[in-house]
Length: 87
Image 1 (cartoon, helix red, strand yellow):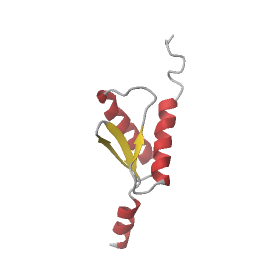
Image 2: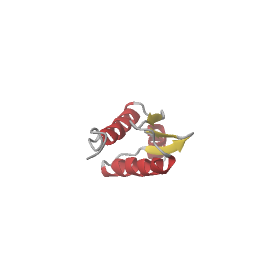
Image 3: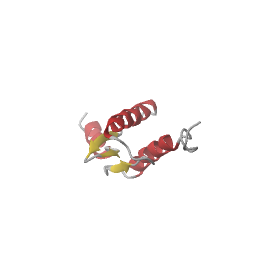
Image 4: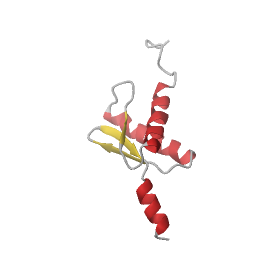
């Protein structure tokens, strides 16, 4: 049995979904994803890929990047609109 009874309850997934929603609510602004535990650098790339995969599955265009040791997301609505207008 895990020492922390809150492990495996979906909190990291909930925080990922919250970060995606925040990016959608604040287009063109970078928002941070913050896990509830200290995130080692080796797990950050895993989180980036998980967030990207979730966005693809939801058919969302969200930029995800690592910046200064943090994971950040944004909805690039201005770029997407410019691309549509240029067609």
